[in-house]
Each structure stands twice: as structure tokens, then as C-alpha cells.
Length: 197
Image 1 (cartoon, rainbow, N blue to C red):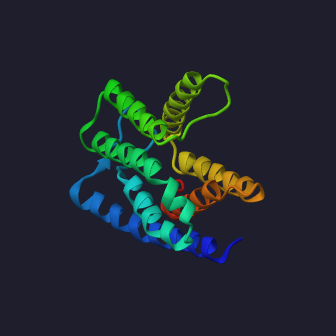
Image 2: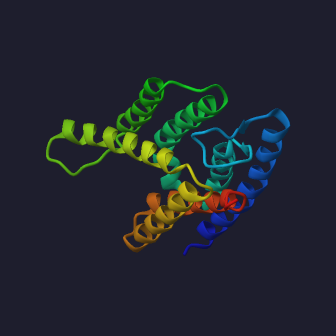
């Protein structure tokens, strides 16, 4: 593995641990907590806003990888991810209707499509665009549905990122390998605080 990519993963991990600790402190201080209810598995209030810590770690660490490809092609991915982060924060703090969340997810997918990032499996361009939107919305909701036990969605995301990074490195796909590896480091830092209980 490239030394700069390895350094970026370590930076993502360290920043994520620090940022998660800070966000957890702020969540307890300002009552940004997921309180127990009949529909929840946990019995104690759980700090929210962990996504902010992972996002910050990713943003800080990605330049360390020194990949020009990521900078050139990542703007639209970052814009879509930022929209989803803001949506998640608002939903955690104030709640948001499923319809509005779905529209935000579709908008994030549309940003990718506008940037030329889409599935290229089918011979018809419009089918590829629709499939991309369904894929992004589907993954967002799949991860959201997994988020009912400590470490579950983070663990699945970390395994997925490690797998994507490995396969991409073996196939010379620089962009995917860098983004997946750095995100893996950011998720590991978050998981430090997210294991059961």
C-alpha cells in the first residue's frame, strides 16, 4: 500500500477518535441524545451526531493521501455526502418526515449523476441513471435500518470499506481504493466508542 494512503488511514482513525470523543461530550452537554423508548433497544440515553465526527475525520485525512484523482473526481461525491450529513443531523435533532428524507436521498443521488458518477451496467443511459438513484437510496435506507444495535451499521460499513479498498487496489482503481480506505479509518475511530453497550 502507498505510504501516503496508509498515513491517511491512520490520520482518519486518530481524528475520528478525537472528534467522536468531542461530539459525545457535546451531545451529553447539550442533550443531543437518543432517549430510550418502547421502540428502542437501548436502556440508557445514547449520544447522537457521530456522523459529524466521521465526516470531519474523512475531510481532514483525505488530503494526506495526496491523490490528485480523488480531488478531481470527488467534488460531487462530497457534495452528496454533505447533503446526507446535514439531513441526518436535522433528523437527529428535530425529526424529519420520511418523505423529506427520501427527497434528500434522491437529491444526493442526483448530484452524483450530474457529476457523471453512475452505474454503467445497462446499455440505456436513462436506466443507468434510475438504477443509480435506486442504489443510493437503497443503501442509505439499508444502513439506517441496521442502525438499531451498537456497532452494527458501523461494523458493516467498515467491512464493506475494507473489502472495496482491497478489491480496488488489486484492480488499480485509485479513487475507490483511497476513498474506501480513508473512510475505513474514520469508521474504526467511531467504532471505538460504539461497541455494545
